[in-house]
Length: 109
Image 1 (cartoon, rainbow, N blue to C red):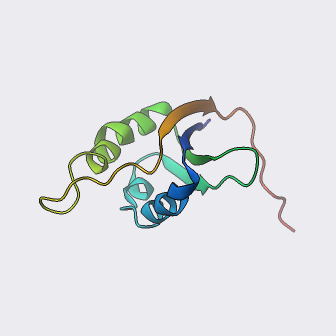
Image 2 (cartoon, helix red, strand yellow):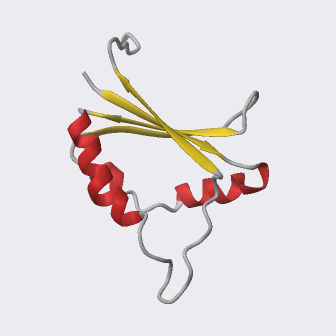
């Protein structure tokens, strides 16, 4: 079964729009990664200021290959030539890992 990775991002209220714009304009490299199954950026509604970045992968090896390849490359280096890398929108993050043990989909009519 698949594995799920949830990156919990601590985002101050004044940085929410910045974070969402950055995700909207991201390179979309994850979609073409071997073993990638799903992505969602979840905005908090109540009870927390934490955003959740949900990704699902065929297996742990696929996730690790993405982490060491496209993700690492996307998060290194600076912005435009000679420009400073923008300050992170999140003030901290935690990675949660899960294995899918059961799943269900809507029944077709």
